[in-house]
Image (cartoon, chains in turn green, cyan, orange, brown):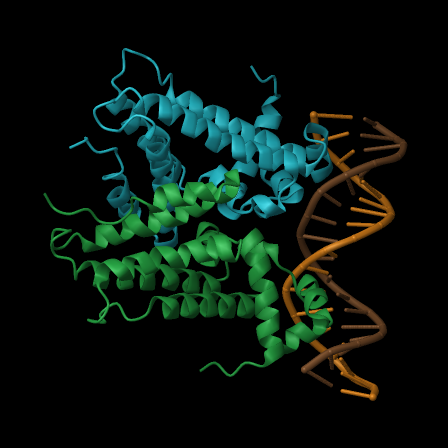
Length: 188
Length: 188
DNA sequence: GTCTATAATTTGATAGAC
DNA sequence: GTCTATCAAATTATAGAC
């Protein structure tokens, strides 16, 4: 468990909303402070530097995301349902939150990020791919052995790209058009 | 033709390199000035405001991108070759330039952009989709009529997402893994 | 076209009182 | 934990000399 104060969580909430709209430079201590009703100096009490805040933010995002997915090896859940759950996690980020994927945005600007933030962005995708590979490996009739990873990469790429497209053009239907056809196809 | 001075083009070159690494907040007048060997105030002579510079940058990027694609209706070029050329445009942006897609980054942060910049980011994707729809419509054996647009959206999404993934994980092979299987499949 | 000078604002950050 | 006060640096931008 992460033993963070309620105020620290509030700070992360505000920072996340801004970072998922404008990236790492999209949030500032002053704007966070204003939103949570304290002063900027007080934010530094909870998070010493912006890099700490950013890394914690990305870690919390990843942990929550993976937690929503559940165990990829759970024999009680069919792999097809797990893949639908994966798509739903992205849909929820875009539609329910009305925001972009935090680590997608951070990943795009990774060359300008402090290393501890960059490392968390990388970890998000590594864990995502691991999770998908485990699920897809349970579907031997759909994907040739060994290419589970390629199938996982295609899913992640399609969903991240679909978020950008839907967001840019202001049309959530675009996300659905892409999501509809991203599942690994049966071997023929 | 755009009648811009050589110095204006230099400014755009510097700004593009930074924007394709850190987004709209990833470039500044001072840093541009330093790179092209003038002072920040002089940059304002060429581009009155940052929004002007950003909009011009996105427009130049879009024009060059579409120019590299060529005429989607050119009967002398098979549609399959045109689609390979489309993938190559993304590959070149990632591998040759070593940078992200400018409008992908701008699109992700569109909610925080000045309207004239946001409009150009939207235009990039609208024109990309139009171009792809025209090409895919020339391949009636691969896609059911009417779903050419959905097929186009899937290609754009996959390529934008593949760039992010490859960039974040520092592995260009990831781009290739995704690109390999994004072409519309034959009807069966 | 480019410069100096300067303004107004924002940024991440620290010291020290309460 | 939060505050005031303050800082150094960076930001976009303008006025006016050359």
